[in-house]
Image 1 (tube, helix red, strand yellow):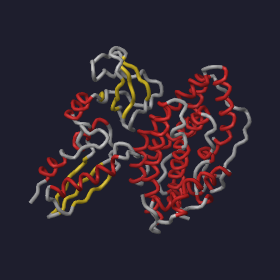
Image 2 (image 1 turned 30 degrees about the horizontal axis):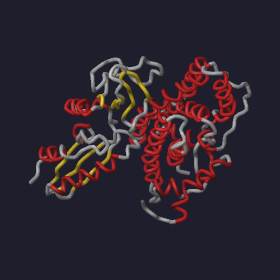
Image 3 (image 1 turned 30 degrees about the vertical axis):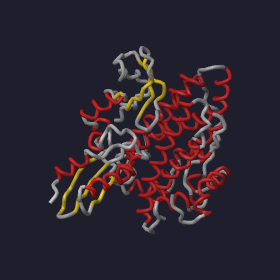
Image 4 (image 1 turned 135 degrees about the vertical axis):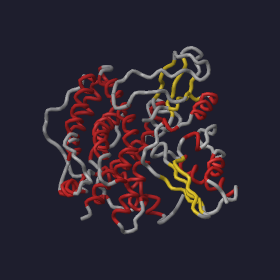
Length: 249
Length: 161
């Protein structure tokens, strides 16, 4: 197994699938400003995907382009988190999913900037700047809805109750991480979980939200075991390339 | 034979398709120009990862230089050092304001989650009594503001650092 390729798929697929999820709001946002915000953020994610999967293709060395990797893999070959493939349901749910992810992405990119792989470090440096805007946006909404009306509070608390079980996977690690740590591609990542926890605690305190007590956590996305939702995303995402192979637009 | 200086001058005729008042040089996306024998290499950097204007700028650079008689042009996209709004030239900032887009203010790092909102003067009436409508505006690089005095809505070319 090519560990760096595996790791880049994790990064790229998280961006691709979450970017796709956000793009589903295009034309459906609760207010015009948020419609534009979510599609703007989606665009950042798709942009990140382009460079990450391009690098993944180079690292793999089999001549696959970023388009090949985005559009022509099967569900089991995707390495994204289960969190990012969860369906949008309502706006509050979308913001909660986004916040839990943004709060993890920021310290992750900060760490990856120190990677000894120059291309990966450059992608992290670039993406971090965008991620800071995303995190500010999603955390403000979590606070506004949590500390809002009775209805907004109960609905976003429910979203947190549903999504919390997917957060354990954020810190998934296996032999891929071990090998990349040894070779210096992955710098010290030990502080990421603590920083994530600090951010969510701080924001949930302001949002008057409570973290569910159940310790149960799902994982599987990082090794290609996905929820049923990914299949539906890929059906839509890959339709054109599957129906009209090699079509360009 | 064409010189680097001439290429830079030609590039001042290539405009940002989204903010047509700015050239690619004003915007600070041109990192380097290298002349090697009879070939010309231009290095650019994206403003935002997903900015759809980058591909267009790359094509426009090639078209403009071709029109000027330059041959063997290559354009390379580099990510590091990442573009920030500090790369915007002073001339670019003035052009933005005259065009009705507030140029980036000196903002603190975005990693502080709840920093005080930055004061963005209205590009129309210069009032400092303005409010943020949305962090995300008509393009990735802009936020949406409104002036509380003249009531004019306006774009703010947001600070990226």
